[in-house]
Amino acid sequence: MADGAELAILDLPSKSVDFLWCKPFVRPGGRGCDTPEAAVTVAGMILAEGRCRASKLAAVGVVNWTELPPESRFRPVLLVVDEASGLLLPERTPAGIPKDHPLPSRRHRRTC
Image (cartoon, rainbow, N blue to C red; front, side, top):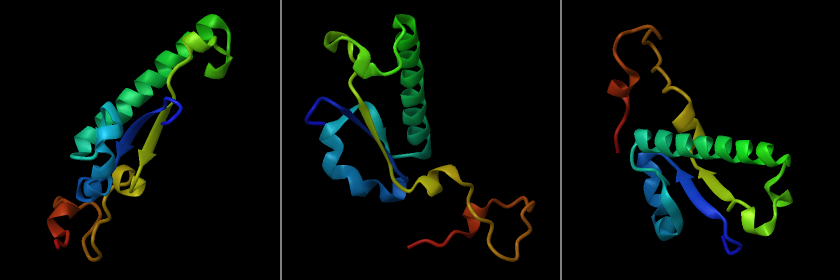
């Protein structure tokens, strides 16, 4: 970040307090911690930006942003993904309940 990189963060809402300290450093719209939808939105924004950057690189015939003239270079984006398995994998169905049972596994989740 000292060299101009931008920060984006994805985390589970239950763990989002882990990154409250760096909230002032996160790029606009780059905090995907408060809801699962926020995490998906931030990931989608990063993906869309990557596609846009790739098309710009292709248009000028280079492979890496460091090959661009300094005034045309992109700001790197540092994406921190904490608890990736909790964001990407479906919740485990508790033992004894058939996987095709209509009750969602969230109903059986333990709370603090």
